[in-house]
Image (cartoon, rainbow, N blue to C red; front, side, top):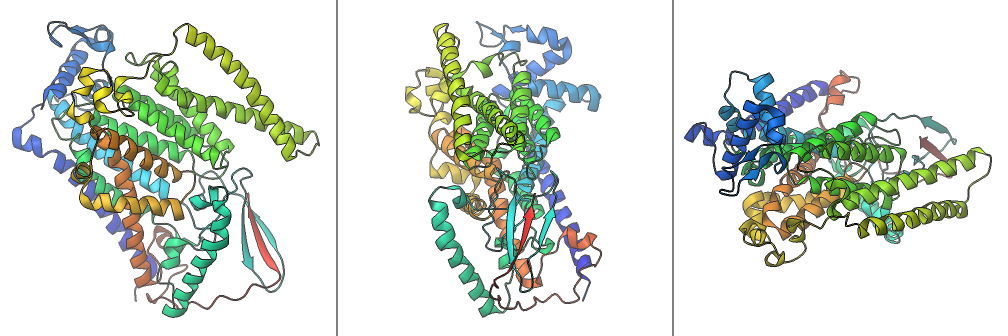
Length: 578
């Protein structure tokens, strides 16, 4: 038979071709309108955006900011420069100036949705890849990550002696997967005492009956070896296939549909990717990716008013990680740099101004930022106490946190009372208010009269996400939560629940579910695919196998029979990872 690294090489080439097919088809589908009707702008809002882009190209940024368009909202007119999100116009002008100077503004505006539709497809694939990178470090498939100390302990049996080894990991190392039930008080004890032993018993019975795991351990847990690496690449490629043609994204990225959402989906997904990428590894901060996440968020702010969703979602995810006991220096640096850089740059957008620091709908992320600073102050005080030679107890931990947060609460109450008396805080917008009250009771007739502000129904999800994606993405969500949870992938759980809640309240927000539905579907289908491959070949083709150049090749592609599990002896081997 062929060496296994050659099988892996052919497999990798095949995956590359599938990704190329997904991207080319994403572009071809979005170009159908241009091929049918020519290079024309469709609908009212896209044509207004085209006029704004044309004005920016002809008169420059300064005049654009102060432009009062008498033809808009006639006869009242409109101050365009300070009432629109200019990211799409600026992007088109930069493409015209530096990339395609021979093209007309009209042609560029027609093609921008298709170009950014492909970029959004690729960014969503990156998000799926990053949230799938990791390893099953515990044979019980329930590896517990103690992020407060950044040490993960793994026990293995040995009949001879007890040894201890220490391995140092850098920020690019993957994290261990865990189960969400491990982070719920009381439930975690029940889970470890009942569900884990039952699962291990069923797996052992499966192996005894079938004579081999047939890919079962390769999907749900293993010793962390390369042949059992998670199918992150496969998840990314399947995600790209789904995202390239899911109607919820397609309807906002068709050629000629020059609207804000056509580039905002790319800005949103790339911001999410940069955020979860900054969370890779154990406790080493990823400064570069944290900065990139802040810059990507700035682009999102400039592109679309939906930036409020992005900001709050990342703030909620960071807070959830703290609640799960996974606060680390890495998380502190990532969120701090994201918020500081993103908010500072967002303030520079004319239509936004000081809204991030005044609007009630953006106070949550600001509160999370303040709490992160207080947590880090507590960590610094505890480290100083430890360096002085004094052993810190749990009582000391509570005392420090109560003192710091108590003092901060008093100061915050005084500041909030003073600012509120001066009318500093702005009200919640009508659209956001419409997410929590019936669409006919927001108080804004313009908002209440729009059909797309009504609640969604089951038919809307099947129409915009397709029936199969609606059926598969909940399975992907459950799989991530139960078997594939770490700092990065936990973002998918938060994103999935939030997107479903808000899209169910307002049908136009189904657009926000396109990326997460594609990612969860990609993760589920990739695991099914790789389970089948592992069952057939005994191991899954991977890039590691190819780069090893046959160091662990096997001339047979039939699975080897696995020996029965030996009983644990009195002595154990303990491996500690720092």
